Length: 154
Figure 1 (cartoon, rainbow, N blue to C red):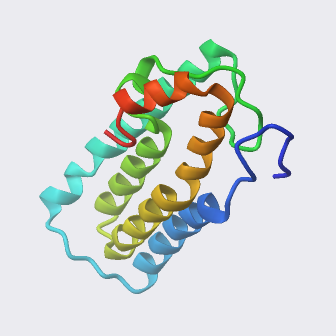
Figure 2 (tube, rainbow, N blue to C red; figure 1 turned 180 degrees about the vertical axis):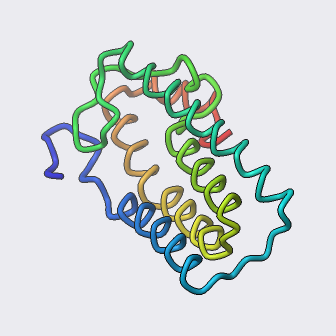
């Protein structure tokens, strides 16, 4: 996506890595299974999957309520700090991580679970700092105060 003036930054390839890692892990698991989990642990994978979907819906509704974009290539018009943003500065990324974890467990895919670690580190080190710098530049002390009270993940 092209960057809009005043936006957090071009959408980095990290999201593409997230999606490709997930799809690639599932395909790898279907073609060359590396299944390491007992059935009971596979079944527990539905919990993070459903929690992740619910968290995403909750976080998305906060953006809708504030009439601001959740996409990093579009300008943010208001700092969202209610709903799940009271507990995490990045509930959408957290939701994606939970969904990813759930899929990895349900499909019993060591590949998906290994790639999840890489994806989360890339988000934490590359995408999130860029977005936080943008928010600090745009909202100043308001964002600094929010950042000091709410953790990055949970």
